[in-house]
Image (cartoon, rainbow, N blue to C red; front, side, top):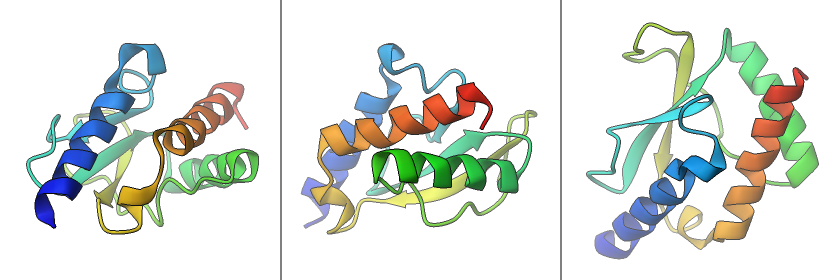
Length: 116
């Protein structure tokens, strides 16, 4: 049960880390950079939790894809304002298609870049 979920998370992180996605330099980072288990911390860059949650809700309305349940806090941030969530590759998350995952993050990127 662990190995397929671990491999799926590795695949998702690789997909979202692709420079063509334009996510990992400007919007998110993974800690650790590659999954070591079926859970990883995703740091989302932004001035406040409220700003990021508002952008997330707008992206959910646009794409129908919820990227996280809640942001936890700054964690061990690297100097710039960012907040993290725990991405656990459980039974439900492992069923999310690459297309849906990309659609959700693309919508989030568009909302953030538009300043909504």
